[in-house]
Amino acid sequence: MLRVSDLNVSIGPIPIIRNASLDLEEGEMCGLIGRNGAGKTTLMRALMGVLPATGTAALNDIELLALPAHTRVAHGIGYMPEDRRLVPQFTVEENIRLPSWTTEMGGVEERLSWIFSIMPEVEVFRARRALELSGGQQKMVALARALMAGRRILLLDEPFEGLAPALARRLGEVMSSLKGQGVSILIAESNDGHVADLLSRAFRIERGSVVKA
Image (cartoon, rainbow, N blue to C red; front, side, top):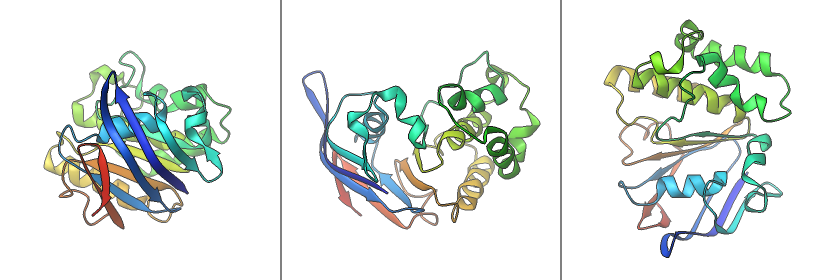
């Protein structure tokens, strides 16, 4: 499904990601495990086109790095940033629908209904503005927004960071329910404590280099 080879990313003159390679099969859930500053966020931002990169990142036969950043979501890639990046003045539902406004996405109403079926707590506050939510609630909305776009690939950056134990358990349940849905998921975490039971494989990243765990 996704093949990343010899990915290199620099910020200014400083190399951050060095010849990183990893792969995800269809429907597989993998971890990208590394301490803060190891390069997890930089790697995901490069895949989404937020940062320039060299190397290859093939989604089946599509070379992502050759595409403009704003077109990558249309290929079924959902991204949950570490800092959520919700639009504060938008309602929860508007934030979730946002990827559909920038692409020619079909089946939006069905997709939204499915998201609410697996995350009913998000449907409860669908009409509230994002700025009115707690940090944990915003995390759930950010995942829901990623699911709207991520029909093939989900890139989840530190989804469990800062969550209370009860909400972390609930988020784990939601992610477990995604197994068997055919979507490939890459989860970046500083340790595998929250995700070990979910993963089929894990990659370790240290100083921008990726190795299999």
